[in-house]
Length: 345
Image (cartoon, rainbow, N blue to C red; front, side):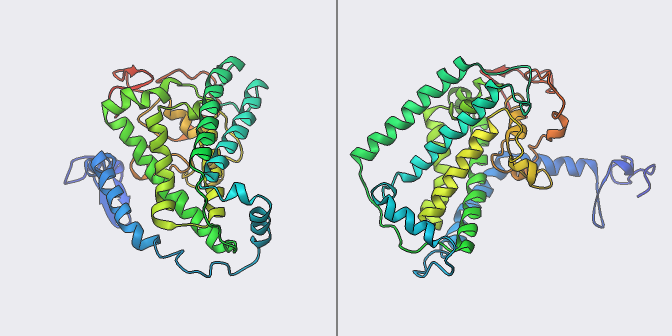
């Protein structure tokens, strides 16, 4: 394309056009495509299509009774089910794994905050010990209380398989749950922002914090907490039926990512650090969402933000910036309401 020539179709300069293989797209066509992909209707159609296809895509994977084809995880699995049989066979043991991961990882990032660690993203504000106590103690009291209550009132036991999953089965099911669950929570997050009644009465509780820290990740309305959990267990419970060990590792990793993305720290093991092409989520990408809430809805991955054009690149905001202000870089007509915007762009 000659950059100075004009397009006979739209009249714009050729340098402003997008080249996709042999196809030249006009700026107006690209804009329409982005608006189409960004629309909530496309989200709904994609969710319906994914949900309807899951039974045929993954429903058959774990129906074979002969699960294990290697012995790599067998000794570990045998030790777990023989050492703690009355604990791990409870149907809520996955919840205990998640709660324990949440507590330990929050303590890790709390240490970073109290030590004024250099990994902090917005270095102009640090949570105090008081902030951590008033946010963390009620959460842990509720989580521990509910887990104990259901553990006693509903002592439902599940039959654990004697065989461990193969490494292939473990990795396959782990990634399926991670990808499918991550899209579900992206859709849940977009839904919370799309409808004012949900945004202003439920999701606004979480967006009280424009500058987040680890304990703020679990600071949500009870209904949103339930919705977030359902997005992560829908695939494994209703479609995939993974091995219990795989599920426990998955919910623990998912919880770790939850704390990481709300930690306010840019740690080396965050997904966006080691996944290529900006497809990984984490603290730095999600930090942007809390002061520019119409961007970066993703959780473990940012691939959904890239696909549906809601992505804000981390390099535009970090590293090197220590003077962040709420809504910095947003249009002037965007007015925050209880920490979020009246209308998403």
